Length: 344
Image 1 (tube, rainbow, N blue to C red):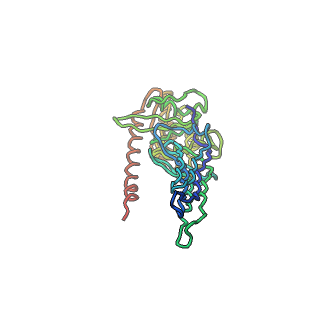
Image 2 (tube, one colour; image 1 turned 90 degrees about the vertical axis):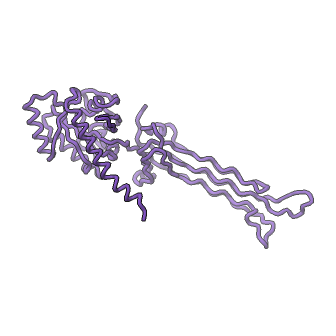
């Protein structure tokens, strides 16, 4: 399945049906009075989060979504049929933006969450509504209300517990393949990964989701390479796993390049908890390991773990550290959620 995380859609809710002008006509009833029914309401356009989707590719092939119009009212006080709603089925983690691509209308983060994007028009009143003491035979009715037409953008930000960061060829896809059932493309050239991959990782009888995005390069936040297209996918993560290629001659510079791009991207991304790992240590001797670890610890100002995704050296320790950071994040979020839910 191809990956698509940004698309434009055109939606229109249904117009309401017009009211009916009608009079009761029966034998022996000379003044039957008005009996025109109301028009039916137009269908609305909804967005609903469904399980099992992790791409917006369906919206590449269908971009126009028009709900049905309501039917006009009829005689004998019969109301017109309401127009059918239309539902856009989107993955969990989809943001719906206005036409300017900046204003967030809604952020859909739970399966089953349903949001009305365009309300259908009301049906018009039939002439029965206009009967009064001074006007026993009104010859007027209301037209139905027009539908709402909008142009919207859908932007998908994958929901994962851990986001993988690093320069191209830092070993992110190898780590994901070694620890989960995900099978990302792995090769020894930059930008092997062209779209995000998700993998479910298990350690100590617990599981969490890891997102692998294309490698970042200097200037990614300004549009260079592929990283700026996909940094949004790690915004929702509880913790970032920053992999640094141990075979590089400039591990400190490589680390600073990624940090600079996170800060330039903005938001809370640079403030998220990070686990820094010196990767590919199976290719280093003991002296090189100690030297590069010290260099990286100096650059990061914190502890650095060592790992080899290929040899699976140190992988379990890294996974346990990530699990601990995820648990801490959930504990921090729980009081905030309880405070939001409680209403005095």
